[in-house]
Amino acid sequence: MLRPFLALALLAITLLAGLDSAAAAPPVLQAKTYYVESAYDRAVLAQRGSALSRPMASITKLMTVLVALEHARPDELVTVPRAATGIGESTLFLRPGERVTVRDLALGALVPSANDAAMALALYVGNGSVERFVALMNAKAEQLGLGDTHYVNPHGLDQPGHVSSARDSARLLRAALAVPFIRRAARLTRVETAGRNVASTDDVLGLEPRIVGAKTGHTDGAGWSQTAAARANGVTVYAAVLGSPSRSARNADLLALLRWSLAQYRRVATVTAGRTYAVARAPYGRPGVRLVALRSEAHTVRVGRPLVERVVAAPSVSVPLARHARLGEVRVYDGDRLIAREPLVAATAVAEPGVLGKVRWYATRTLHHLGGLVS
Image (cartoon, rainbow, N blue to C red; front, top):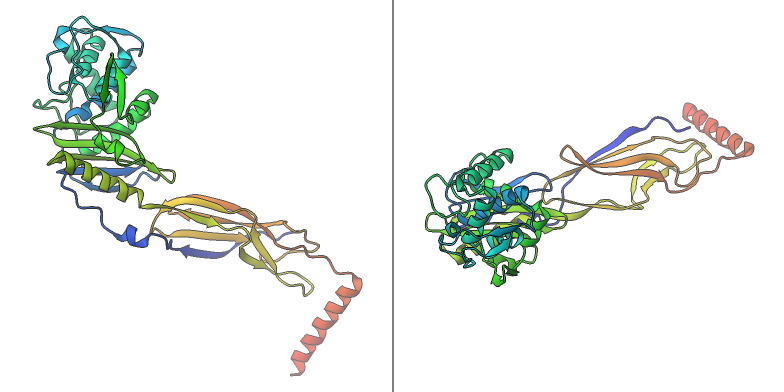
């Protein structure tokens, strides 16, 4: 019968890999505001002015498409109204009266960031009223907790009161990428839509293979802005940079922020098979029983952040003891979060001695005690 388990060890382990990277400050960016968070542990990894409301340009279209797909099926046909065709800037050159699916308009709004496609979606879902559609956008922003955001139009061109923040832009992308259609579209570098073969405005998609989705924007008021998500080692980070001074600066800002953020995580061994985590006493003079894990585990953790390993095990055992008998467990914590938990078992079997063996052990122990008294 095993005695009740008790804690034998409490050991803090500091991860050695990548400590220099973890200690380094975030990259210096030219963007006016920026924000990056990790979906893995909900950590805000870096930010500057992240809650400051400012123009966000065509990042708006993530919300436009998100709302449109909640109110219309992708295969519905839209007759393009004249009011959608004169917006200017980025465009699909839609013609009044042309019939285009919601799917193609959504792709046009997301990939080449076409303003006429966004406006056609808004007028269709809003039953001819942009104001009605914008009200749906603002209601969705409130639902998502985007407290720094207020929409005035569906395309993102500069207009008083049409604002968001770097934090809200990153969180909007996270919500939008939860929709399979948007997730697929947000990583396309070129698309065939409404009979037009068009390229994406998102330059970084071709510069960093770990990016899983992005949306760019540019106006005089917003500057060069973009939000993107990237994934590595099971960690997804969501970043936004608003107000970079040029297209190349925006790309450099965003790539530096994403790469630095992904470098804050490493895959490390948290449990090692065969390692001796504790030794339990055995009776009758038998050698101590090593307690080992049978299975290795590895987890992604924040670099430079200490893990805590707790070993809970039996201090002594009875015999006979079978090999791989469970004698405790090892638990590994990242802060308050339990990330690994593995049984600890006897590395070897221990046989119970026969009658003569027990008599010999008791006799030896008695002589030892007597010798101690004499000395």
